[in-house]
Length: 146
Length: 368
Image (cartoon, rainbow over the protein chains, first blue to last red):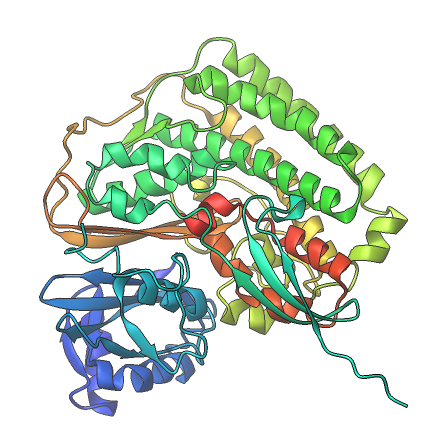
């Protein structure tokens, strides 16, 4: 069985290494500050005991007050999983660091989130619309797009 | 005197017989050798994720049929299981057996299509496909007995399955399971040591195991690269822990390994089917009692299963209303394509078609 790591436990460990990076945590997920997302992701990928070598899923959600980017991480080696989240506030200029250089899986999925939600992933080498055409106006998966 | 040359840009697709749908690749060529490739997708984008936010949970079930339309049943299953996890619904045992039987039949059917069209891309025009179609037809006939449909089944329900099978289903299924190993032997006899197939697929389009994990490949593409990761074993869902089966893996991750893994997986699926039929409960409920207008509690879930083509996940967010707040599908085929560029660079145009075919894709799922 894949063991789902408890968000609180991981948050405690991360708090020692990156003070202030984790802004919230519950049973399933941890939420990190978007500024420190890349550092935390890199740590989770390369540290013994975590070794999240597989990014299963990346999705963005529009909660109106803020946008949330959700990373479902899995470690094939240790067979455990974790939900990592980050938030960005406002409706314009949403910036999240790209994890492309850690997990290539993010290639299409970040482009998808850029296309349909309008989140900019800094550091992505080819951030273009994925499904819709160049010049399309708006981001259809936002709650205010009707 | 050197002749001045420049790279040639070839637009392959969107309408091209080898792209299995509407997929476009912008290929940069040096003579016949590929030096650059950019996939351009979205020609079949229907906005299923947006549409789903305006419909009730059960109304979204038919949408999942239309993701990868050759594996409709497993798409139904993945969605139903994600919603069950979100709402805390328990599935009766008999329904679980139904689900396993159906999922494995779907896997055989999907791999038959995958292998058949892979050979089609290789140049064996239509003959292998007709052999594969012979058996796929039997699976489709069985599904037609189940739900009256041949392509988009809409059979699963939250908490079980929609209806019981007619009497004639069981003898037909048993016959199919008994005959299938011989048919797989027949394919192998015709294909696996075929000189043309070996020459054109061995060592072609290698995906190394570390890259396969890094790009998030899953299913036969990941296993062909030598990574033993199958969610039915690694994270057993439903009742898969009750069956005895092996997880076939490849050694180098070339097109031949991807072909061979699919053939072996069909054999393992037959093994699971045999065991599931032997253990099948004669009586029992088919579906838990679930309200038609389901309102799952506030929360979110990521439910994933091992679909024929890899990890199919549904990320659902509920705000306790009758429609999902967010409906995201993690499709294996889109992500398996991530390394297409690296796999094809240095090969010829004719190899590109084989490499692309060996990944086994269906545009309905990539574009959503």
